[in-house]
Length: 289
Image (cartoon, rainbow, N blue to C red; front, side):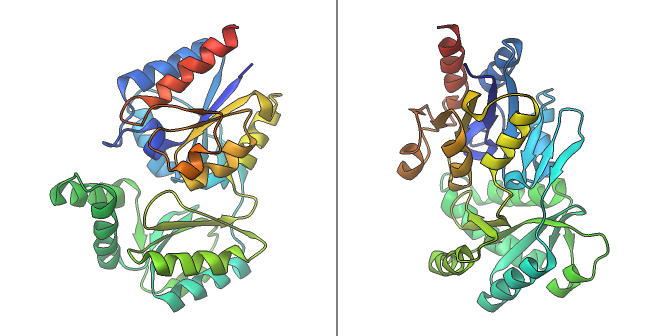
């Protein structure tokens, strides 16, 4: 019996236009009506995650920044895990050495060092990822990202270490140079207290080892007397691996890489074919048997 559904956003719940479709919205409501709790589990920050959900009139709990924060339906933070100063120093020094663009996801919003460089690199990454989109659409997407995410800019990365009351929950690295990203991932993966993942082409996501989607889902479910075996997790990328491995019923999107599909109990349709809804309806049928 599935009592809780955890869903990724980009490439999963959201279609290629970055929206929750009518069918996926209906599926969420049907799950809720059947007594199944639905929780968003995303690499996005709280600021970026809430817009597509709230515009559909949905009020859901969130696991954001890959598990660094758990936020209940009332908007209260239930759990937070940040990178301590020594971990942060190791990461920043390495990223500066490789001269890559990165951003900080913090309790004071997103922080970036160089907006112009960020726009240039994101443009290249998104043009590769979304080859069918026009340049104007991609630039508008980048503009909205900076606007909606309330990104602040600092002159030097060193300022991160002097900001009072600042907690860094996650760092994201963007680069069009995949060889460079692989080298960085290899080095950081050897650190015993870091979790390194990716939510798509041209990026790396860096969290504390305890800030992972699966661990967060387990904590959230346990508090509500739900076993992890009674959860369904659905995703499409490598930052979903932890929750797909832990959940009782793992679903991979039809648009997911084969490595992700191989972890799944069920492979659904793509995110542009309402694959999320298709998986929810399957679970509802399973629960009735």
